[in-house]
Length: 498
Ligand SMILES: [Zn+2]
Image (tube, rainbow, N blue to C red; front, side, top):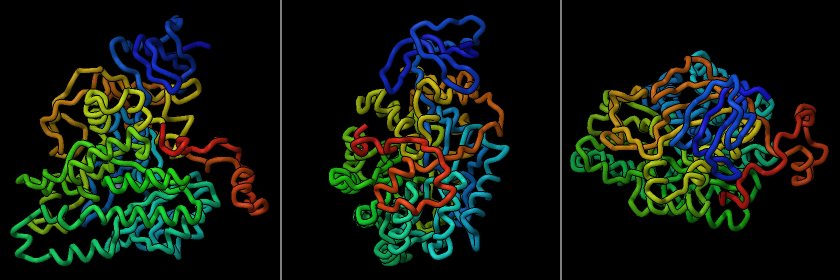
């Protein structure tokens, strides 16, 4: 086969092992792997002295999100440029229905945000915010190519909150359709009570932004994860805990997976490299995100969870706000727009603190940033690994070359960084998306709007699911017509061990 491009002489990380050699690309796909491919007629991308790793999937981002009385400051243009510079080649955002929106309306709205702007490929998790209205729209979204859904156990004031009835009912539907529910797990009633008790002028004057971590003790997350896992176990519907930040959460997931409960968990880079001591800083309010940063022992436990397997994915929960937006708090922590920039630093942080820090091998890092997220989100084998037939989504990183974090020289719209002044290796020297170089010599060169929406299929074939559920005749006409996309479970087997 004629090769259009050869990524030459790098240390190539594949699911089958790491080797020094070449990656051959024809059109948008990887078509050859070998020690020394025939270069006749091919464009050469020199990767000598570098790692060649699969493009990163950041499966938890919020671009141009109306939230906390403002709109997050990275849109599909700046957010995906930032991602590409950090080796990210796929993002999954959350389409949230507002006011009287249907699930279809939400997807349409997010399509409009991305189309013509996104540099890299994308899709959305569909948020179910009003169970009674939305429950009968889920199947239609699956047919439209959306196979992951999201519910929030908090955010009543935003109009997003789901109760136990909604969680239970959605998980039943996930079981039926072979799809997955993502849950933001925090215990709303107790959290609201703790916030109300502390929301006094005296305490705000005394503690400032420190009230953010003070009002969210670890049990707020742990209780909610435990409850969501209970509904997962009862229904058999697949569950994914987003942005897990506590050691207690990791313990619960580990125990549930040992019982065979179909639950997996993600953490975010910020929970692996920062702790709540940042709130002592003068500008500590900038670090408010939800859930908030936790204690050093949680940081340690989450790294252990990555090593042990109960934490399957590292994402970012990117939700960028500028200093000016963060200043809206005026001393009241409940008014801080919650979120941080993250897309540009996901790979550098994980590589520097994980691989160079001796906590993960390069192969384990690729599993948590690319292979697992692709499998779990229904994007494998197209995305997530360097393999024949997969999309030629690649990041080429130098093993030790560092960049100092300076928001002025970054692609994100943030005018601050949680990591300002940190020296990080792992920025992408060259990023390829479907065979096209979109970052060259650490600078974005790809065209805005070239990214594509990725349709997804439910997991497993219908017969497998029917066997599991005993509902042999219940498949709809449309779902019966679907080809079986992935025969095996997308969950790492046993759960999360990969
Ligand atoms: Zn989020």
